[in-house]
Length: 315
Ligand SMILES: C[S@@+](CC[C@H](N)C(=O)[O-])C[C@H]1O[C@@H](n2cnc3c(N)ncnc32)[C@H](O)[C@@H]1O
Image (cartoon, rainbow, N blue to C red; front, side, top):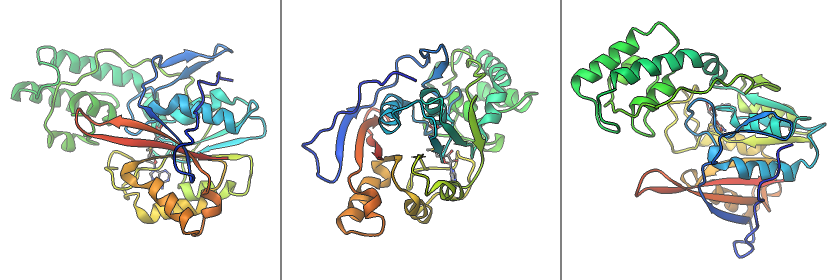
């Protein structure tokens, strides 16, 4: 089992509806560690993934250890919106006895299989960008040679990685025409990605709509739901699901939420306000949601823009 990091302390001066803890966003200082059994644990996704929960990892481990106090025997942990698989990976390393279901909706495992190609392309682009100032827009000639390099590349194209090397934070492209339509910058990563053999070991990988997956485990009291849906009211085009995860999807999800659960959200999608509204008005689901606890992190978009990310849980 992973050691429990300093646990979330409850701040009882906050609302009676939710015990909450407020903290600053902290990137884990060590991103790949070995646990007591010598097993490698990643605290950051091996390849870029927008929306990965790296800033919450220590809090997440702490909450999982509170919900499941054994090595996980008899438990099923369902990462219904698996994304990069980071939460599944950490859950399995933390609770090796549990069945951990990773819902790989975006086929992240395919990207992991091609890390060598991705590194090869990064090296080619690093050469093309060698004389371009970092964080600055590319000149017309460098831009053309970068786009030619990508168009002529003979291997797998990992668009999320490519976007992270050439676009400004938060921007993305999923194809060459999309990339051509954007302003390009030199934000190339300086080093290769480490190979991530074993990252998905021990996980049960599926690709299902969240509602089907959760309904199957709805009545199992030893099934922990991990819920990190796309945030309503935010850009989602970088994810595989081209249908926007909107209010109706959100309400469909809320009908399935029951303890024990760990739910991620940001102020931008008003989950906390919604939960309080349901509880205060005794609406459908209030019994399943009342008394939830909350850990909030102040996340920075840039120097001026800030928002709050939340980990909400009940068990
Ligand atoms: C915020 S991301 C999850 C990030 C993940 N927790 C991590 O740490 O990498 C939300 C994920 O939900 C997926 N998704 C969108 N619609 C879905 C659906 N109907 N069922 C399951 N997953 C869906 C998206 O493709 C995306 O991978």
